[in-house]
Every structure is written in C-alpha cells, then in structure tokens.
Image (cartoon, rainbow, N blue to C red; front, side):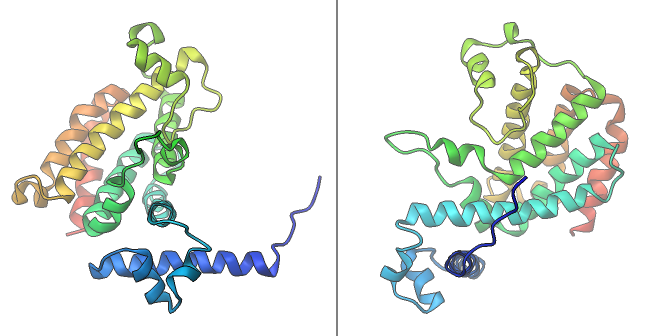
Length: 253
C-alpha cells in the first residue's frame, strides 16, 4: 500500500489562492456587492489577469465558489443530524433538511449562487456540476440509510415512465447510488421527488414569493414535510418528527 504524497509548495500556494478566491467571493456576497472576476481580484489585491490563471471565466468562478459554499454549509447540516442518535434515521434526515432551510433563509445570496445558478448552456448540461453537491450527497445518503433500515415501499422500475426509468439507472444528480441494484433504483426517484419539494418551498421562501407571515411561521415548510414523509414510511412517526422540526425552527428565531 503506497503512502500519500505530500503536496508541493506550488500546490499548497495554489490551494491557498483558491481558498482566498472563495473567501473574497463570500465577503462580496455577504456585503450585497456584485460578484465578478474584477471585484474578486480587487478584493484580493491582484489584477484581473492574475486571477485568470486560477479561474478563466465568470462561470468557473461561480462553479468554484458554489461548490465550496455548499460543502461548508453541509458541515452544518451534518452537525445538526449528529445531535441525534446514529440510529434515528428519520430524525437525522428531517433535522438536516430543516438546517438546510435555516441556512438558505440566513444566507439568501449564497443559496442563490449555489441553487439558482444555471448548470446548463446551449451546448450541453455540465454533468459534473449536477453530481458534486455535498448537500445532495448528505441528504440522499440519509434517505438511503433510512430505507436500508425500514425497507419502506419504493416504486419498481416497471412503474416508472420510460424517461424516469432511464434517469434512475444512470442518474445525473448528487446521489448515493453505489451498490443499488436495478430493482432498488426506485429509491432514486424518491430522492428526486424529495429534492423537488424541498427546493421548491425553500426557494419560494428565500426569494420572497410567498406571504411573509407564512415564511416567518415556517408553516408551508412544515406542511411540505408533512405530506412527503408518508412516502418514506414515516406517517406514524410524524408527530415526533414535527416536534423536532418545530423545535429547530424556533431555535432560529
């Protein structure tokens, strides 16, 4: 078994520069300033051409910063889950989901950069950008852990429309699918449906497309969870899960 190679001085310097690019970008976002290559370069005290050696375009800048923001935020989502026992699979999933909403509302520009950033252009979908998100891997991993514990019903391949069947067999999402047999790939459809509902309600809240009183109360978010958890075999556990969610929502106010 080989030993890990120590990074060279040049490699350490390059990683440090990437870290500085992300830090400067997050500062600009937090201040409500425009995020651009020129603005990041100015914040770092370098010229724009010097920055191009690390990020060659605005889209590369956005991809780098979005990935790092999501990775950092996911540490918080995981920490929220770790407040519960390892075998509380349902509670950990719901608490992480609630932590995701809390982060999104507290950091709307970062949320927008990560989740309202187009990942398709006229030529093609950038597959790697659709499969890397740390938050996606955490939440789908939690959904899988729950299913492996309870084996709640999932759709069979034969029940799925042709396009959906093709997508779950070769998924282009940040999902934990390694080792899932074809007969178990209905779980991936649940991943997709769960994310669609979670993103839908949170995005509407973050971008203000909902009555402010409903946003502040969190009732639409709670209702979205209430209607989805039976799909995960958790209908009987909902009263306990709702208490966990509401306690976490109250702690942020």
